[in-house]
Amino acid sequence: MAGAGADETTFACVLAAHAHGGNLQSAVRCLRAMSVDHGWRPKKQQYGCVIGVLGRAGYLADARDLMESMPLEPDLHDWVGLLGACRIHGNKELAASIAQNAVRLGPGTTSPYVLLSSI
Image (tube, one colour):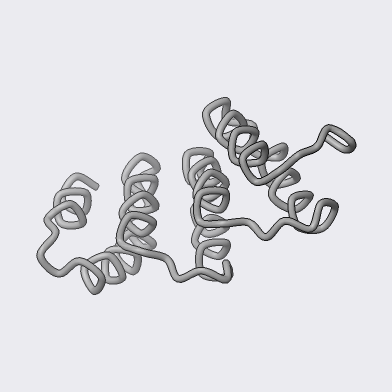
């Protein structure tokens, strides 16, 4: 992408493609290159793509760590998405702690409870 005039939208599209294609290593490299090589500060959408691909690939702790280390505050959607990945991979222990964050941010939301009940 060097020299191609990459901007935030370009990175969002490339990260989304990597995420949908399950290209874990490429997505992580692209997120890193976004800030290190091109000077763009990743936004929630870019972090969300990488967190999603990590979760779907079963790297649940890495996804949680990235989510907790990003300079943006994770929201209910972020926690529920990661909880869904825990359900897919049957990780009960991590799901319990993630569900606490989801419930804290959306006390009236039923989706954390539904996901927990299906693990």
